[in-house]
Image 1 (tube, helix red, strand yellow):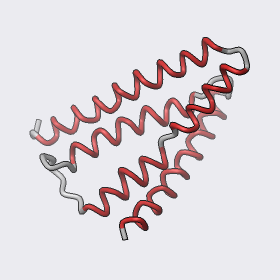
Image 2 (image 1 turned 90 degrees about the vertical axis):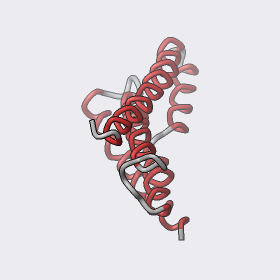
Image 3 (image 1 turned 120 degrees about the vertical axis):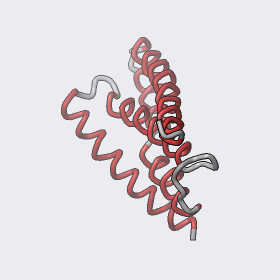
Image 4 (image 1 turned 30 degrees about the vertical axis):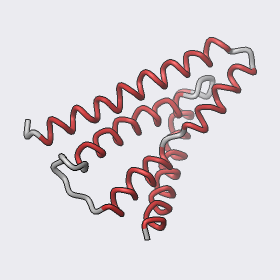
Length: 129
């Protein structure tokens, strides 16, 4: 049954990623993969908060299947590491090495900050602050 939950969550997350990425590309342009960057950062914040809020010390109880639905399915379908990798390679192959490097640094740094912020925010919620 967990596989069905993950599959449904993945469909939802992938659809959300496709919609938001298109929205951002339409608003900002496609010279840099801003949509992927925003999606990976926001996904990192969300999964950091959710994992902490619903973890063993969290304030929110979520049954295992539903936790997998959201973390593996929705967040896994929403975030885009494979897209990030391909877009970075494409930038490098097109002679835009500086943009490729910027994409790697910005993605790694801000996604790590995002997951940490999500975690810290959830810890504060768990502590009732």
